[in-house]
Image 1 (cartoon, rainbow, N blue to C red):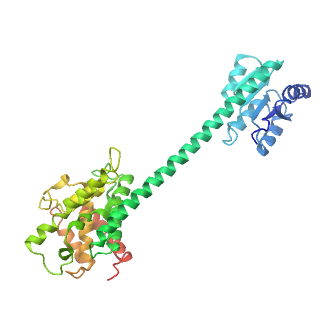
Image 2: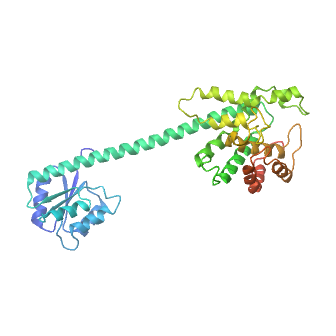
Image 3: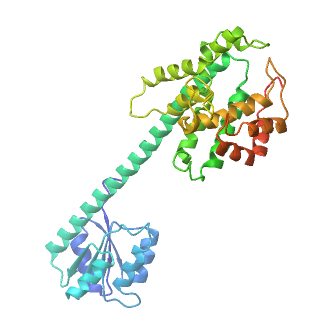
Length: 363
């Protein structure tokens, strides 16, 4: 309780010294006593006091050893220790402070000095406890708010992705698969010298989380074109090719609501706009080539193409896993970044496992 008196433990092997200290302190504090270091450690282990007045020269275990043992225990190290001793040499005081004591009072005791020092160090300890509790609270609050922001990000991405899915005949399994493909491929590449900086664990997390928005631009494409079972006409394909721009612009509009120098939607924007670019520059919408294409979009390109190849669509039957590997391998240096293709082939079996785990409902 707040009104309880602070507890002072007085440790001294001389009964008269214990009586004197107890008499001086008892009106303001709850006093406990111990006649040697071992007994003091036993008392502290059961019920830690708020402050310890510790004699140096004692049998069984002296004050220096007692202090050393207390300071080695993290849960007890913050208890203020004031040495009370007849050893008044400078080197004695230095040793006491080096061991972690907060003060050093030379006997014989001066009542006013003892009371003043005890009050001062208890006040300091209370301030330290307040700051410690405050810091713990702030750390917990920061963690809670980060979690809250993360959840809001997930909700925003999921809501936007769900809208995109509602206009397409692909199921949410496509979204789950491509997110897993991208994450595993990025993890495979993160120790490659070219990608160490770009593919930190934090970035990989954001990239994978953003993959559901790569085709959000299809919201702007008429359903009869998206769902057409036959080959698209030139005009229809040109219209389809606008979905990266539509997707990027829709994400930019969403970003205007987010304050800050860098939006968590940056990777979603990159993938939406550039996942149809090709390594040799023959893709769209800008004809970017090589490393001009953001790494997030290069990852998405392989994931998207692989999933399209092995999946059933209204206009095609699924291809076997081995055939999909052969097609992607043949496009190394043309459609795809050669380093990404090499990494993909190294974990191709894992891609197959992912495709089997998250299957389309109509498969």
